Length: 109
Image 1: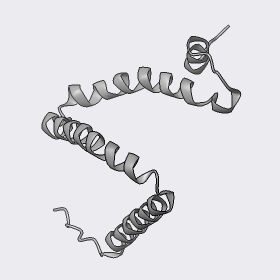
Image 2: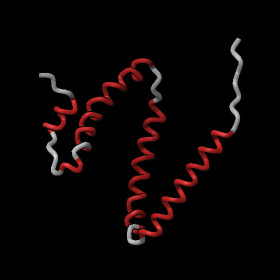
Image 3: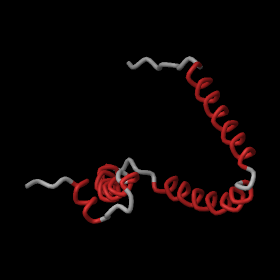
């Protein structure tokens, strides 16, 4: 009998509800898969340690500083909804503008 990684994770992390049965196995699977998949980048030298540490530190600081703000705004769900809509529209417009800019191709010799 062959057991997949997903089946093993489902047995290790039993589900409290069938509605969320996909979530914990995928987390367990990613926890095993991502470190193994990243070894190739470490060995090839294509991994930049400085930016990775900077992004990690920035993410921690950003999360800790955003938590009180989100808790304060949570009382005003309409305001939070509009903030999310504005951020999505801004991101969409930014991506569309960058996609419409003609790219410059360098001819190889």
